[in-house]
Every structure is written in structure tokens, then in C-alpha cells.
Amino acid sequence: LSLTFYLYIALAGAKKKAVQAGEVDEARRALHDDAWPDGVQQINNSIRNQFEVPVLFYVLTFMLWSLDGINWLVHAMAWLFVASRLVHAFIHTGTNVVPLRRSAFSVGCVILMLMMLVAVYNIVSV
Image (cartoon, rainbow, N blue to C red):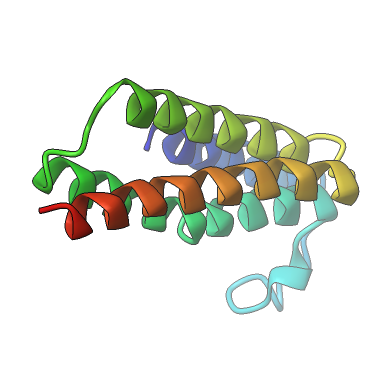
């Protein structure tokens, strides 16, 4: 959540700067992302991404908690997932090198898959 709020603050700053610099197509601004310069769209896309894969993380975390499946391994995977999201957002809003960004995204997805296997194990072993 902190990452998402940070990105919203960064977006507000980037939008303000773009408006002041006259880089915004005012006629399209309200409904079209392409009215904004690339830097604003980069941050906006990163925010959108925070409501995709991280939502699965939240669900898995609550599932594992309700199954009493939280242990040191789950904690480690959870923190690694958080780290992968921070790296992904840093790349996404910075250099935006797609292969590098995809790698950070993929690491997070693999961690989620492993967490899902732990959840399935906890369901089956009950």
C-alpha cells in the first residue's frame, strides 16, 4: 500500500510539472491518457499495475493466515515479493527497460505461485 500511495504522490507531482510546462493536451486531458507526456503515463501505468498482481498477493496472504499457514518460509516469500514489486516500480517509473521490468515482474509471479502451492498444501493437509 505504501508503494501505491508513493506512486500517487509522484503522479500528482509529475502531472503538476507537465501542466506548468504546457506539455498537456488540455482538450483530451480528462478522458485520454495520451494527453499526458510519457513520464506521467509511466507513473500512471505503474499505479495500474499495483492493482493487478499485488491483489493476488493480498488474497494469498489472507488465505494462508486463515489456514494457519504462516511460517518463516511464507514470511521470506512475502518479503521477497514485496522487494520484487519495489524493484518493478523503480524500473517502471525510471528507465522503463522492458526486459528488466519483465524479469522483476516474473520473479514476483513465481513467488506468488510458490505461495499458492503452500496454500494448497495447507488446504490438502487439513
